[in-house]
Image (cartoon, rainbow, N blue to C red; front, side, top):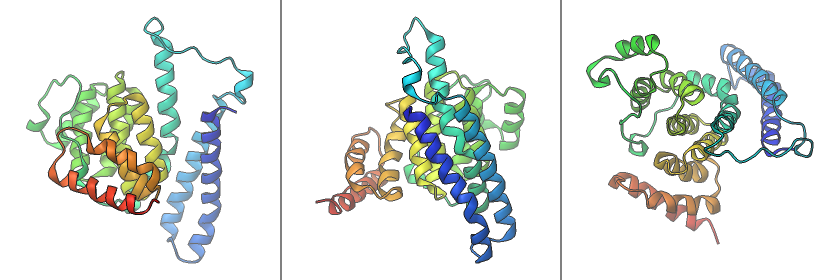
Amino acid sequence: MTSERKRVLERRDLVARDLDEIDEQEEVGEVDGETAARLRAAYRAELESLDATLADLPDDSDDVPEAPTPTDDDPSQATRSVRSVVMASIAIVAVLSVVIFIAAQGGDDDITASDESPGALTVDPAAVSNEQLEAIVAGSPDVTGMRMALADRYFSAEDYGSALDHYLYIAENAEDAIDQSQALARVGWMAYRTGLPGEAADYVETSLQLDPVNNEAILYRGFITFYGLGDAETAIPQLEDAFELPNLSESVITQIVDALDEARGETP
């Protein structure tokens, strides 16, 4: 069985189990009826998405020839490989959307990249309102730089619900892997901030597959691994990598040092 298929199957089992538990959670008062209905719809939508993903994956790696390594002479193969990685990651978006809608928590401005946005811009985003940017993006949906600027503005304002759709559009449709990586890193941080550390780790890992030198993803990874997943041993080298990143603010450096001290204190 391919590792990708195994990961999707494991995710499907988890979602199915969560769906089964909604009735009990509603019965004991952990969630109200409206929230339970949204969660059921989200889980069912995710199951459909995961089933569709599974239908496109091989049943067993032994039955399928190993794909050739993408090369500059075969750009279509590279494009398919990137899209496969992205599509596997966005399968969890239904639940993330509901969690953000129901219980979005504040972001952390000290652990956020700059507002610089890649891509060609036809309008200075700083000169227009969110509403004007939305209209521009609606009229030119594939101008990645403009959409990224709008999503980044929402992200900086901790309006995760508004940022999510734009980042996911970029992840699915942008031609540049660097743009996709940036979008997925921020979706990962939003997932972590809204209580989905496992999914957050998946998004950030995918971000780094697309762009291994994405500084923001490198920074997020260590915090998610330690504080989200509780894996101090794995987090230590990740946090050490984050500490070596250039242009960190004093506040972020302090947070990294504190996290490293805590992580080292939890390991032999």
